[in-house]
Length: 451
Image 1: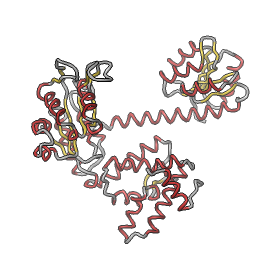
Image 2: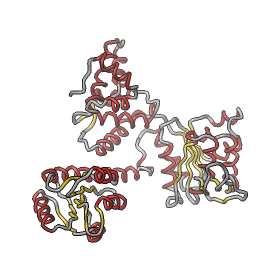
Image 3: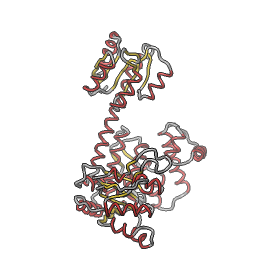
Image 4: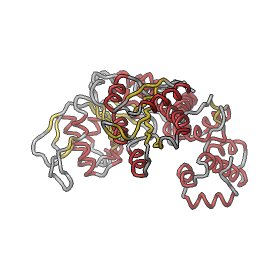
């Protein structure tokens, strides 16, 4: 068993001594505390993985202490021990974040297996956190994946504009990485230590978008019980990224234009302006010039946004970058799910290269995540792809028969059922179909959930 640090909190010295002896034999380092105060000091000083804690202690209750541990040290797992188990305490313990709740004496044989599982969860969480830190490093130009001429040209333009204060307009289809570029520009600018705020303008209606963007004063409308800062104010001295700017209501475009021209705006319900110093990076998949000509977008705002324009290429125009991007997401999702996957088969990569990628990098990311979930060997294979990508090779080799389509669908549904261990509700969610449809397919193909 891997080594780790376990903290035992119990005021019964004999029980602590017994637990220490047993747990150390399993390869763990063990620390002891007779009360919660002593335990708190050890938690501050030591890199503890798992806490084994009595419920009844001289200076407090272990069930409540678990909540404090989860608040201050989210990666630590806690197992509660009680002399007299009851359902209410057990439920409250789990709600507070306990890994498990067991009864002393009756469940002694469960302690070591429980510790092993809790420690595995801690190690996985640490690996995920490490990976997320690496993902954070992706928000630099060095972290943008790809070596094709088109993406290198876009990166070169972004590098040039990053140190300036110029407003930037990013053009590209959905999923081409516009927010990644915006993050990279921000981190390469003089504002890198200041806030980066992002808002998708298509995600809100007019009134809610105005409140989210500009903020409001208490009492300005029903439900406005207190003052609220908008994202423009939150991003003061930093960068505000406005995705899907073409979806912004034309009335709000006038308020944004004032920010760009004067550095001030008026909150909803306020009478005096608020001043800000914020850099705007906007993005859209629309032709704003055409929309401005048709009166659907303010022409003056378009010219203020289009100080420096960068076009991001769709994935279908940079297919040589697909293997590198797929490999990155393979490593990310394999580590996140604690799976050992060495790579992708040649046929798997060939299918990726043939696909048109209308959803661009976002679509590729989702497909790799799905493939990792379904993988049952050291390589991602064609069988791990969605049916529409599996069918692609049949189309290139000749007409597709009804039998081929049915075979691909049957295989895919069976693999998802195996992955969910027969949980049909979860299988329907992963397959993105209705539960009734799934039951019909199971009956039609005579499927089961056994591997």
